[in-house]
Every structure is written in structure tokens, then in C-alpha cells.
Length: 159
Image (cartoon, rainbow, N blue to C red; front, side):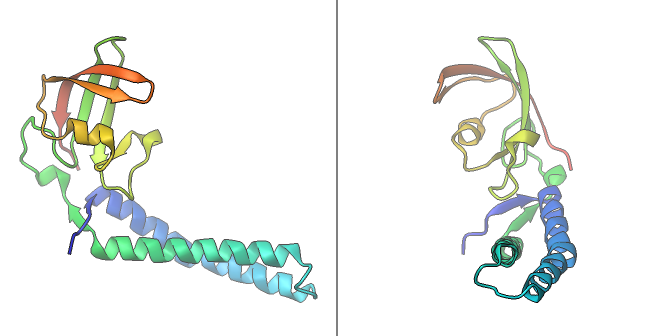
């Protein structure tokens, strides 16, 4: 069985979301459904239908998180001994050779990826282009908006 990788920090964040959904969101939506039912006719009750739809979303997310957390291989990134080579969990500082702009990404599991927090999925084309490279390497990446040239400034592993 293929166990998808996940960082320890990402697993903790997802467990926190799961706990919040179960202890706060689920009871809140059950109360909202009960209140909407008390208003009478359910066929034309928009509050009831909206609450049921939200309940379906929350229950689906709970199932998704439980399944992901039960099958994931949680990796303690701080214990990796990859040196300056890029592997799963690496925090990579890059310099765009064309614009000089510097950016930092961490390579994480699919479910914990969040581009706003600079967490990129290990299965993304950009992460796949980084994996196996070393600090000091330069590489070319073809993005939808054109080809970019990057230099790997630093590679580090931390919890």
C-alpha cells in the first residue's frame, strides 16, 4: 500500500482542524439544522437546505482528514539527514536569476500544501523539478507564464 508522506507539523495542523470540525463545527451545524426544522415546512426552508449542505461538506472533510491521517507516513523533517540535497520536507531558498527576487518554499505532502504559506506539494511539477538537486545548483523551470531560471541559494531541514 502506498502511504502518502506528510510532515509532522502538517499532521499536527490537520489533527487540529479535525478536532475543531468534530468539537465545534459539527455541533453548531446540528443545532442550526434543528432550529431550521423548528421553522416548519422543510421544502421551502432555505436555512434548512443550506445547513444540510454545510453538514455534508463538514462530514466529507472529516472523513477526508481521518482517512489521510490514518494512512499517511508522518515524517519528522528535523531528523532527515539529507545534507544540502533537496528531498521531501526541505525548506528551499531560491533566487530567480532573471529578476533577482528571492523566495522560500517547503516541500510537503499533498493534503498539507498551501501556496499562501509557501508550502508546495511534493507531487507538484515545481517540487518535482527541485527534488534531487543540491544547494548551489541552477535549474530551468517551464511554467505556464514562461521559462524561469532559478538558483538554489539554501536548503535546510527543520521541525
